[in-house]
Image 1 (tube, rainbow, N blue to C red):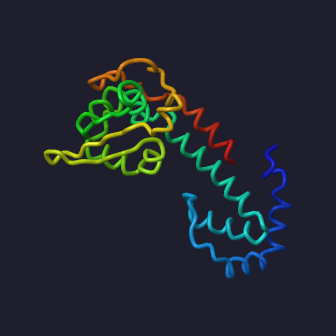
Image 2 (image 1 turned 90 degrees about the horizontal axis):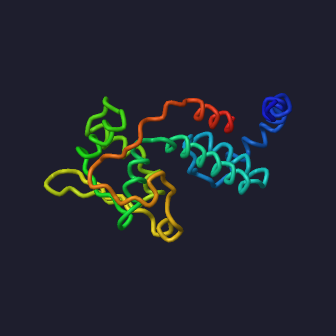
Length: 194
């Protein structure tokens, strides 16, 4: 049985008995923000952990949760896999515009996307993309163009592992992987977080 489910009564009893302490901690804490995606939850837990002297431990846990969230998003994501594949060879960069990404998405089996949806998806993945790559956006000829460059530390360390390791950078969107069909992996990852 999972530890949280197994100890839920003790956890709720502790919360009820210490509620006044947590309210006082909330009012006196100087913490105002968190990097956790569910900010209100992250801030509440951070303030409670601060009151208990375990803010560092809370931040470590949040880092692990965010890492798992990011891996769930990026595992088998057509855009991440395409960028990784195309940055393997050459100088570790991939310059592409929305139309070329749309072609790559269609080759990967995503036929319901449009150029505007791809631009929006890149905006939504901005935090993850900028953690993985140096990203530059330009507008030559009024076309939004992206330059994804592998981080210098990745290039020096051998880079992102890819099934295309050792292959030259393709000039067109050809070897883009097909979408994942296994939802079980994602469910397992979510269960690990719970």
